[in-house]
Length: 140
Image (tube, rainbow, N blue to C red; front, side, top):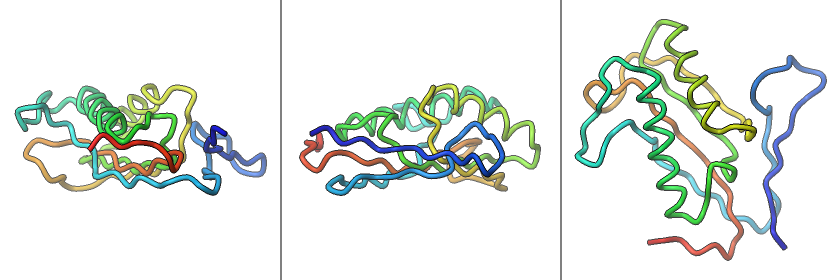
C-alpha cells in the first residue's frame, strides 16, 4: 500500500496559499532535514543580494537531499522559511519563489524575517520535515 501524506485546509479560516496542517499516516518515517542553504558545490553563496535566485537554489539543494532519502518535494509535510531581511517585499519574493517550486503541493509553512543567517551573504534558508514509507531505502 502506498501511503501518502494529506494536506489539510480550513473553510473556517482565511484562504491562503498553503495548507494549514499536514497529516502523516501511521507507519511512515519522518525525515527532519537540516536547513537547506543557497550554497553551491564549492561551498559558496552565489547570487549576492538576489532573494529569488537564492530561494531557488535552496529548493534545488532541498530536492537533492530529499532524493538521497528516497523522497521528493511532495513528501514534505512542513517547512520553515527564513529570510534575512526587514523588508516584507524580500520575504514575499523568497516565499513566492519557493511556493512556485512546490507547485500544487501547498505544504504548511512558516515564513520568518531574521537579522542574519549562518553563511556569509546568505539571504534564504528552508527547514523541512518530510514523511516516507517505512520501507523506503535511504541513499546513505
